[in-house]
Structures are given as structure tokens and as C-alpha cells.
Image (tube, rainbow, N blue to C red; front, side):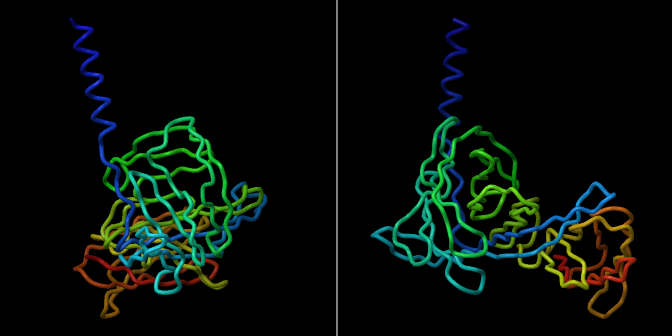
Amino acid sequence: MKNIISLLFFVLFATTIKAQPFIPFPTNGAIWVNTEYTYTFNPPNPIPLSELTDVEYYCTTGLDTIIQSNTYTKVFYCGDAYKGAIRQDNGVVYFVPRDYTNEYLLYDFGAQQNQILEDVYVGNHFDETFVLQDFTVNQISTELIGGVNRRVVYADNYRWIEGIGCETGLFMEPWTNVSMYENRLECMSINGMTLYPTLGNGDCSFVVGLASENEIQFSAYPNPSSGNTTLQFHAFQAQAHINIYNTLGQKTETFVALNTDKVELTMNGMSGIYTVEITTEDGLRSNFKLVKN
């Protein structure tokens, strides 16, 4: 009798897990920030120098379109050109590139381990080229990401996160990385809430600082925040001074980064827009706006 009860419990548990609805892919108010970094050797330091070389923002704004009798949601380069359109069906996300009418598989969050996914759209982050590639699902897991338990599909060397996208960006890269560069999903938010890489108030509009040759390269997230923001440098800093000013130009906080690539900023002042000024020992300087809710 004990074995029968255990078997019934297992069947009910498995059925419950299987019946859990898929987290929808966002169709309105979503922002994805895709970045590209290049690395150069820095002997005798074993850590290579990194440089942020490109940033691309993608948005969904709830605008629909009809293609081949199916309804899709448009994806834009934020505030700019049309990139393509997505639709979803029971955990499967399809994509129609700009100037095309055929849809291609972009993600399958209902895939099973060892399943082969054929003709998956793999697109360049920064232009309209793409290839169709087959993937083998190596692993399926569930992780707490953005405050929600999400399915994570390991498709060869990629991680697809349910309701968010791929860790290398909304659109994966169409070639094997054999040189010193990296593409990543720097930030993803929906309707003013950052979901990736960490949960926080505010969207991804001001996350990445793409610096000129005389400026510091960095990321800041979440922004806006409730007062705690991570300042992530794209290279180790021997010494960097961070000053925060309010709208009256008054210095409210001061931080010093020593031999690190990350600083946790804490703002104790009232809600509003602050200016963060960063200065390194070798004279590089950057500033950005930080919003406290």
C-alpha cells in the first residue's frame, strides 16, 4: 500500500509540474541590452583587458502585425528601425526577420532533454544577417531568475531563459567564438522592472556606458533603483574615485574603488535624479545619471 501511495504521489507531482503554464515572452514594455566586448592580452597581468565595443537596444512596444495570417509582435531597435516580429505558442517562440515572411524557431522552452531542435534562427546582434542552426538540448533546469522560477534550456553552448531570452543576447551569434570577444545579454527589463541579471526597480534604459577613448567603460544596474546600485567596470581599476551629486550640485556620497572591477553604490538621500562622476588615477573620467525611486 505504501508503494502504491508513493507512486500516486509521484504521478500527481509530475503531472502538476508538466501542467505549469509557460511564462510568456514579453510583447510590450520590454528592453534587451546586447553588448559586445573584445579582449586583449595584458602581460604580465594574467587577466586580459576588456573593451566594450558595441551596444544594441531592442524593444517591444505592443505593436502587432499580421504575417501569413498569424499575429506577431514587432521588435524594434529601441526608438529606431524595425528588427522583426515574434509570436509564441505554448512555450515556443518564433521570429520573422525584417524583409522576410517565413517564420523561424527562436526558442523552445518546452523542449525535452536530448531533443534536436532543427533550423533555429541564429542572428547577428548588430546587423540583419542570420543562419539556421540545429541544436541539441543537453539539459533542462528551473532557476529563480527575476523573482520567478523559470525554465532554463541548455541548447549546446547556449542558455535560454524562459520569458527573457538567451544569455548571449536576444538573438544569438551565428558563429563559434574562436577569437577574443564576448557577446552578452547585459540587461533585460519589462515595464520598469529589471529581471536580468538581477531583480530590481527600473528598466535597462541607462544601464550601459559606452565610453570614448578618454572615458571609463562601465555598467550600472539596476538603474533606477531604491538606493542600491552595482557599478561594474569593464576592466579592473587600481584606483577610482566615485562622487555622487544631487540636482543642486551638492556632493552626497563618495566611494573609492581599489583593485577591483565592482563597487556597490548606496544612496541615502531622497528620491530623485543624481549625477555619478567617476575618475581614475590615470585621468579617465565618466559620468552618468542615476535615478533613485
